[in-house]
Image (tube, rainbow, N blue to C red; front, side, top):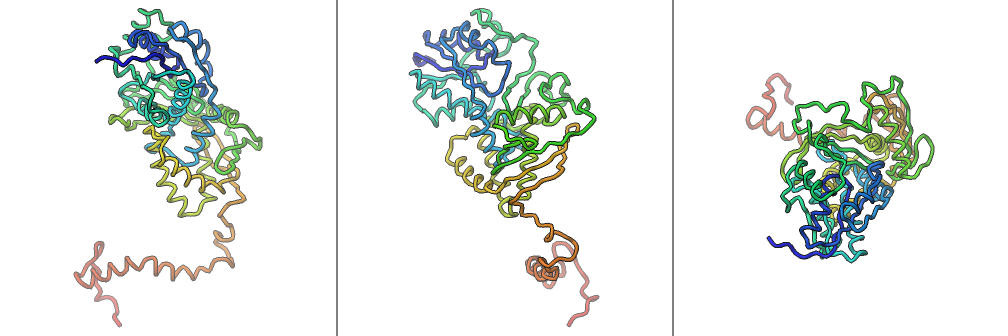
Length: 421
């Protein structure tokens, strides 16, 4: 199939093996088009070292690196956390909500550079191709999207290493590097290698940012997290900017072995995949946020919000961040968070997060209402009428069934033993 001519392409670049070989592949297969690399700094730390030199040596004309850590937390992580969104019960969406942010800046740089195309290194089997491309379609549908994994003949890590050697691409990956990882400030994911068989227990050396709970400190540690309208703002009474707050909680929770998740999930493209995630601060914040919501939200709002959370997670996982529905759900979520402010105290101990206290000026919990002792605010005799009305449909259904057929769905009582008026 003839390839459309593209003069300039902006590539979402990580410096890993795949995106490194994509640079010469684009130049070789799209008539020597100019390749500009863009790397989003989302907290990869040492992975960014030497990246510009590597990109240029691979054949790129320049490299953009943008520090997007605060935007990532403020505009993507925190809203998703406020929504309580968790995909398939366990996955906290660490990769999912990073992709639309990366793609957003990919489009901005393409426009600023006068590029007519963008490219990414996501495979044709995964979710990331959808997340990247849906964002580009929503923000600038005129840009051509190039996904080399759906076009080239490279089918394995060995193939990619051979291509890199042929075109003098500097790569640090070796054939012994068995795991595919994605890292940002929120999480570190692991896929491939031994994990392709879900019966295998992950090896201890695979984990990088969380301590094995068995080797975690023998002494538990308390932490107090303050929230303002559902957003974390302080640790142990000290107000912190988002990035510093997250880094501090990552270190603290990771030290105590908190945030590991071993998941078999349903990919958007139809297959199941097995991954292991390390999400220390995110796991801690989710638990604290839930505890605060339980105090500050009324029953009906909290229960309905749980329904919304499932849909919100599905949208984020499926790459549908830039949609009206996600924005509409977000509007609902923000209303629910208006009074979710306060402090939650947790005890961290060997992989466990134990709620040790919570307080809020907006708390709907009243000790005098809940007390089993004498009180003036609640008349226990009122419960009789409430139960009579609440159970009336059950009573009517059972009476009609028994009077008509001699039995209900659950029992066949002998009414002869009961005195009739």
